[in-house]
Each structure stands twice: as C-alpha cells, then as structure tokens.
Image (cartoon, rainbow, N blue to C red):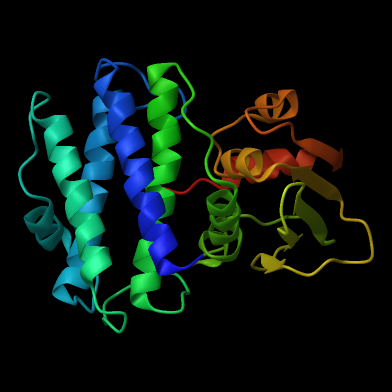
Length: 262
C-alpha cells in the first residue's frame, strides 16, 4: 500500500470507530479486550494517535520517555469530552501524516521504506483493529475491513511485530514446526518456521506441506491472527467467509498463547 492509501484508511477507520462509540454507552464491555470498557478503548486509541503524531510532526529521533509521552498526550478528557477529544486527535494525526514531507526523519520501530511510511501504516492498522473492538462493544458489525488493508495488516503482524525483539512465538520441540498462512481472496501467502530459535517468516511457497495450513479470506485471517476472532468463530465464517485449518491444530494454541501484541 502507498502512504496515501494508509492515510485514507486511517481517516476512514477512525471515523467508523468514533461512530461506533457515539452509538454505544462508554461503560459497555469490549468483548475482544476483556479488561476494557468502551471508554478505555477510545482513550487508548486517542492517546496513541497523539503519541504517534508527535514523531513526524516534531522530527523526534528517539522514543519519548514517560514524561514526554504525557506532555504530547495532554490531560485526560472527561467522558463527556471523550468523543470530541478523540475526533480532534484523529483529525490532527491525519493532517500531520498528510502534510509531512516524504523525507521526514523520525523514530520508528518496524522495517518500512521510510519513517513516514511506517507511521502511516502503523496508525492505519492500529485504528482498524481497534475499530473492530469498538464495533464488538457496540454489538453490531461495521463495514468489513478493506481486503488490501487486511492483507497489509497480516503482513505487518507476521513480518513486522512477530520478528521484533525477543521471540514471541517459538516451539520447544527439537524439531522445526511450520505454518502456512494463505489468503483465498488475494495474493497473500506466508510461511512460518517455528523452533527454539527466532521465528522465520517468508512469503515464498514451499513444496512440502506445512504442519498446519490456515487459509481463508483476508479479513477473517486478519482478525484471527490479531486475536480478534476465536478459532471457532473463524471456522463458522464472518462477513467475508470462513477460515479453514488443515494439520496440527495444536499449533493454533501456541499462536494464541504467545502472539499477543501488548
């Protein structure tokens, strides 16, 4: 996806998140984030938007410490002010990313063609996933995530977050275990090799069958791998279709126990 496409997705998904919150009591539980109420979710995303905007807007070359983070986030809004506060921060982030020069230099934390490309992608995906959470709290599904955005979100998770820092998903077995993730509505295919060593992810098709193959529509894979759908829900099918699993389903438990993004 191009930077402009990520910014358009961020604009759209943020508006949908705000709409879901506007039609729902802020004390409603968020089924996909069991420790949160809807108000907690809206505050979290609003804080992330303000934090993220600071890097390209100020050209920050290092991550903010807690004091710096609090300074850019500002005071916590009341419930009565929350939605307007969220919308203001969302609009400001869209403006910052839209107007930042392509060559802007600032801190980022995943591989990307440029810092601006990183922040546009990361905030589009952050907002899209949490928009699904807001819809879940509202008790009604919103529009399906765009197929291109869903493909991009699976790729960011598998080839970005899962390879960052200490190994998140690994096998304690002496033998390597493999997982193939394949979309049925687009060109996406990822091959994962799990061992005691860091996870290996490639986008090449392998001639030998994987220990577990997961295939389905991009949107359902996106929500499943980001731990927004249970395996049972994915098998039953959602707005875009159902996910199929072939092979060692114990690897699904390994994924779900270790692949959370904190």
